[in-house]
Image (cartoon, rainbow, N blue to C red; front, side, top):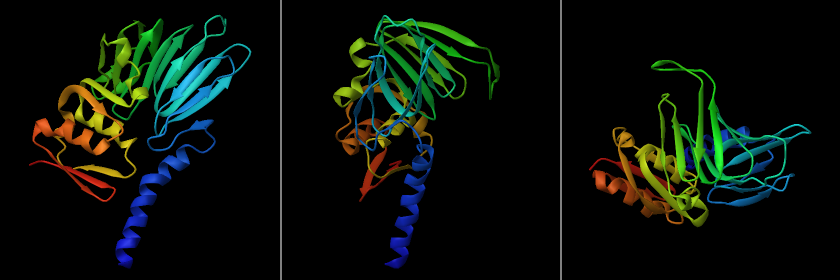
Length: 241
């Protein structure tokens, strides 16, 4: 019993400690499955998603917001001459007055515009395929850009209603990988999700899923690929049939 308790303690530390250290000194932080409204000094509004962290640095000449983890929906108040910039990983989103969503994960950074327009910028970067040239893309209402960790960039249409669907407790997926969806569901499950079949993580799919029930949503995501979901207390194991 003591060995089991010690193992659970180690797992808990490995799960929570990195996030706690990473979020030290961050202005706004949410926990698992928590959504929070953040009022910015200029009157802009932010809906901060689950297990997310946000820093705010406003000055006389600029408005800078850094998404350190997770997801946030921004409704930027127009009429301020200072540029409004959101940074997420290596991606910068520059706007005036608009509403858009930014999701930061290990696999990709996703920017989706509900209304208005934004400019997405990325500096040169080294990838497995070589040096990636600087990127500057304009996104308008109903457009989305996905910048993946391997250097690939996908830009295409998205329904404005789906740009921040998580605010209505829905996970909308269209062409994302199973790995990306699981990373999102982890922020709504107060435990661990372990995947034993790594080929599964690369599969792509589309659909709507309920974030209020991450276990059933996980089953709906991986079921069409023949994978099984086994909850063991707060641990969920996803395995091949």
